[in-house]
Length: 210
Image (cartoon, rainbow, N blue to C red; front, side, top):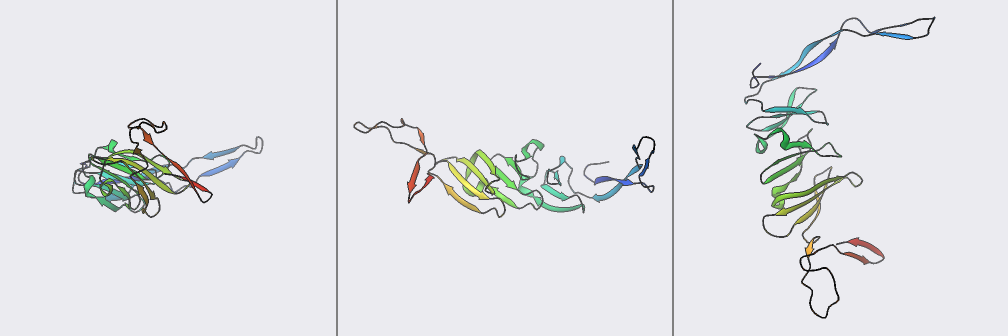
């Protein structure tokens, strides 16, 4: 079957005879008789491009990659749910699920997208912050947020927090990892030149990090 012409999803259909269960009075042991089944075509999806690879995400969406786009298919209905042309031609190892969530990330040089595989809704796009490299991306389930730490081609690194439900950016900071000045004579000792410093502050009886 040519990969470019159609995609078939097969399901097992139950046979007409129902599963039978008998009980032996002597042993009181249940004996189940499994029903036979056969594979039938649930739906057919025709594509214009040749399929590079396909995989099912933990969220239950079928991902299909072609040279033109990355697509998400609703397995229950056999319908295209979304399509992302900017992710066309990606290799299978460039698209993966994020640990601790049902989200999917897709990466190519100069671009990282994190999105909901069911709806295709984007939660993070590295181009919006001008990031050339992602150092850390972590889901924080306790607060329902996504933490991103990245570097630009020029300028300070950026740390940003995003809402997992809406995708809204809660905050972004370029000063969390700031460089300290070289130690000057007469001042008390502190972190050496070029050291990374994260400061903790107290105000009005509460504390926080900066």
